[in-house]
Amino acid sequence: MLSWVSASGSGGSAPSNSRASSRAETARARGLQTIALTGRDGGAVGRAASIHINVPSDATARVQEVHRTVLHIICDIVERAFE
Image 1: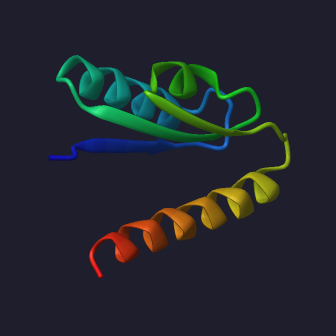
Image 2 (image 1 turned 180 degrees about the vertical axis):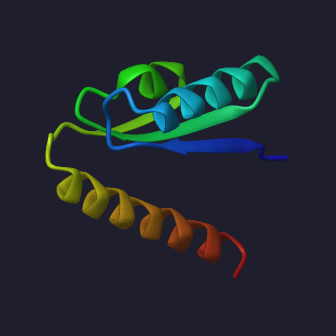
């Protein structure tokens, strides 16, 4: 069985990024795999994740565009797995 938690953030030290990092750490402690989609340097969220997909840009719009594309690819992979 696949169990995973995803966390995303465009970077920085916003409270939402702190919560995402905490959730990723909690999930890993429970044996779950975690995936983080981040921007800038990835921050604590990226460091806490099992799989870290980082968009090294300070432009939030660019980071979100890449995240959206990655999420569409993941959805396509999952859909194909169930065909």
